[in-house]
Length: 207
Length: 207
DNA sequence: AATTTATTTAATAGACTTATTAAATAGGGT
DNA sequence: ACCCTATTTAATAAGTCTATTAAATAAATT
Image (cartoon, rainbow over all chains, first blue to last red; front, side, top):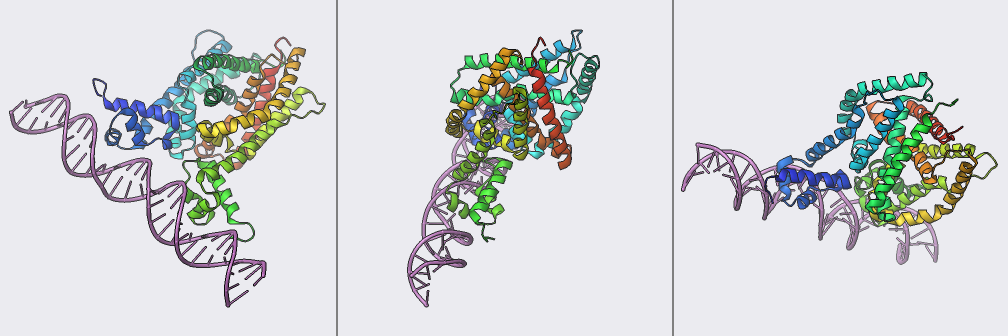
């Protein structure tokens, strides 16, 4: 049951899957132990508390989720091209981590304590990148290449449209019996449509 | 504690507030009883099970939430004007029921059983309205008044952009200390921006 | 081989859950 | 005053949950 990769790792991984699937309060340490194939006490031996275990997973996931925002490549391609790539990269990251939106809604937004812990962390880390993006965007607006819009609204628009399909996936899978291939196809279409919508919404009005 | 309005109603109302705030599994019948000011057994006397009580509340909320889609006014105003009104009405409904998005994500999307029960119900009820909207939209696209887009994508875009700010509210309230007035102002701005974004995204390309 | 250290388990304390039961209380109607 | 019915409570069964403890096993070190 334990060759070179140890049980600690096994527990962590099983806990991650379960937490992502059901959320914090619907997963018991007994569930985790059962899935990992060990005694329930062992979960506490390695991570002391359930909260501890969760935090560790959540922090990692969340960092990964935000990573995409912390880079805005400064190649010499035009702004809109880079923006388009950014939207696609964000969507692709969500494809690889489909349950992240649930985790965030469930645990970050519903739980005040966890929120406080992370927000400041994030805020400081991403402020600079935000400023640079903001600067570039407003410059493009000045030049008349893009319809006037606040940077925050644009970011919110992108995130919201990218995210929502992942909230709908369980519905599509279980209720309309979409298989993996159909889902994959649907996601690609949706990604394309989001990019299209954003780009169209940014065209200047007089043009 | 019980004049003309009875305790049953009181329990229902308190349960609703608690469920909306914390979700099903984080609220105990003891919590509900405490808030309603009665014995815990009384909750079971009136509603027999916690699940029963929840279903009753959830069904009502969800019906209300969907109601907005079940009408698309057929006045002689132009399509885009009516669409604009629709988006605003949807947003306003969310303002009045801010916690609905949480409830849906938490309980409908995470819970397979509840999902099945509701989906067919909804599907049949709204199919006709969907078809009519679909017909009108595609007609406008044919005429060249609107950029080509699938009806479903458009609806998804609207819902997603309308909803997301309500997921962010707890963050804005607790982390950035927005007061009620600032929140109200922010929501109005956001509503305006969503309408603007959608309308801009629908402009035909060649125009 | 003996001893120390790390890993794992069984058992259980203690708190909290939902739901049920039987008993207490209150308010008409007769 | 008596009875009937609806409302409300206290008590508790039966179960789950997290976390701890002490004991057993395995691995590493000396």
